Image 1 (cartoon, rainbow, N blue to C red):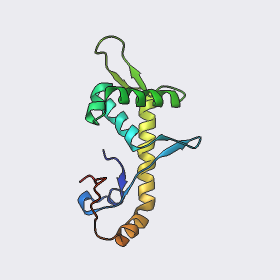
Image 2 (cartoon, rainbow, N blue to C red; image 1 turned 30 degrees about the vertical axis):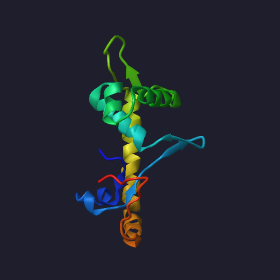
Image 3 (cartoon, one colour; image 1 turned 90 degrees about the vertical axis):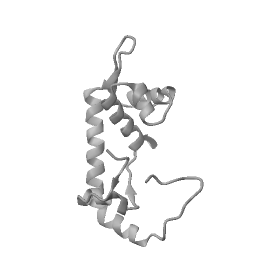
Length: 140
């Protein structure tokens, strides 16, 4: 899975390296950022690994940071998105609601990219030459 949906994803093209423009989705709740591509990736890693610590490692985060994000997601929704298993090394996994939120987010992302693909291509066509910024790097 990707961090965001690019215009070529919406058009069914496979050469992602040819595109510079990427659409990402952030869901705000009560005027505050609540759910975006980072937390969604965390949920995906958690579903794949069955472990909060492994999901965090896959994203280059500390266990504490990972746990705080999971806890914030669990508190945000009416039902927890992540369920931990008791006992040493018990692991964790997505609840049915967690999987539903993940699926809904990715679906909205795909639908939005399809709707915006033409406009994103127009924006991309207006871009100048790529510029290297010392403070930030764009993933290859």
